[in-house]
Amino acid sequence: MTRVLVVDDEPQIVRALEINLKARRYEVHTAATGTAALSVAAEHPPELVILDLGLPDLDGIDVIRGLRGWTEAPILVLSGRTDSSDKVEALDAGADDYITKPFGIDELLARLRALLRRSTFVPDEPVVAFGHIKVDLSARRVVQEGGEDIRLTPTEWHLLEVLVRHPGKLMSQGQLLTEVWGPGYETASGNLRFYMAQLRRKLEADPARPAHLLTEAGMGYRFEP
Image 1 (spheres, rainbow, N blue to C red):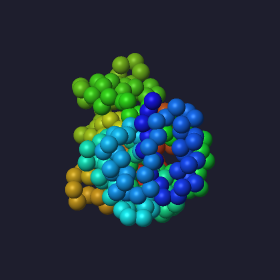
Image 2: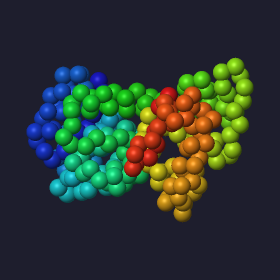
Image 3: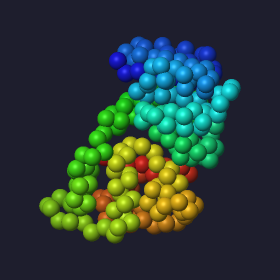
Image 4: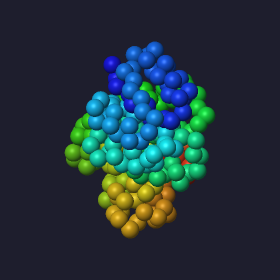
């Protein structure tokens, strides 16, 4: 059974999630505060976390940082905050996905299943295939159908590598800029747009309608195999 930690201070939401998750054979632990969440997580290490940002003691962002200090379990943020800056801050802190209240239980369960599938991805897998492209991470090569190499610049390769190593995860602009360009470039979104456009032109069957290198408006980018 997959162990899930549900952190929310609204009893009706916790109860609804607990019923639905247990019905699908998840092992469920709950917490109504950030302090309790960190304590429960330490006692029963979760394989997946559903976390509300608006907790009565700690901000949910601090809980994410506390969890990320020792676990890579996927974190799905569940919150009434709809401002994109809150979403970006949660993603930068280490969350894997974000869904706003009110939410449909079917969508939430689908996102949980997707996060669990992606959490089994092995980052050192040498070859990642998508569409008509194969990315060889060990050889640092991109090959299209037929075996012909696709030439990427060092920056294009680094950006693609970061995305491919986090399949399905929503990566904020700040995360990508820091990973690829380094500290001090967190606001250089023009760089990111330019190089994402270049990657799509080289790797997507239809760059205007990308199927794998996706934009999440106002938040960041996601690689879907």
